[in-house]
Image (tube, rainbow, N blue to C red; front, side, top):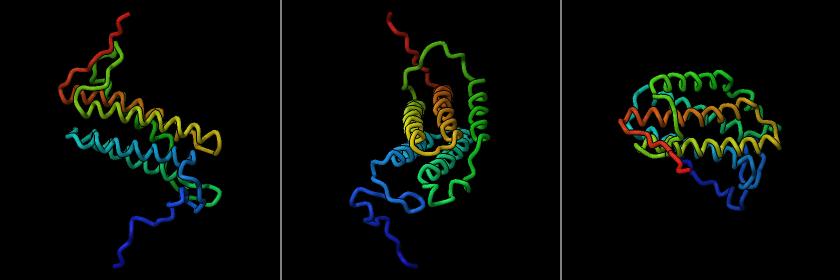
Length: 186
């Protein structure tokens, strides 16, 4: 078996290839969008590094797979490749997130204050994932001003950041940590 190398040296001059072969600068808006989705995926790996319940781990695995699909979607130049049409992503993935949030929230006390990020490391990591997800959403929205982006991608990222907030609350309870309410001195 022939050994493959991870490095190609094709990006040494500050460009990279999209799926379909189009070369763009590494600071291109499309790379910012799918690079931030990739960063979010790595942040989810840290949440999973804590011993969560099996259901949560399963949901996080599905989210990571979905983010790989979204990354591929965003990295595809649809003028040179039909990959976007083959990716299995749609509105039902958004409904799955909504159902998960509803189930998690049903086990939590009502939210009466803003919550300060912190507590158990898994819960704190959810807040990092939430903020990276919001940045990904901003990058994808910006990308959508220049090229076609399916609305389900933007809606999925919007809902996903909400999911990470609810998951942070759930994990605080799961790991028996108190939430830290923000009570401003006015």
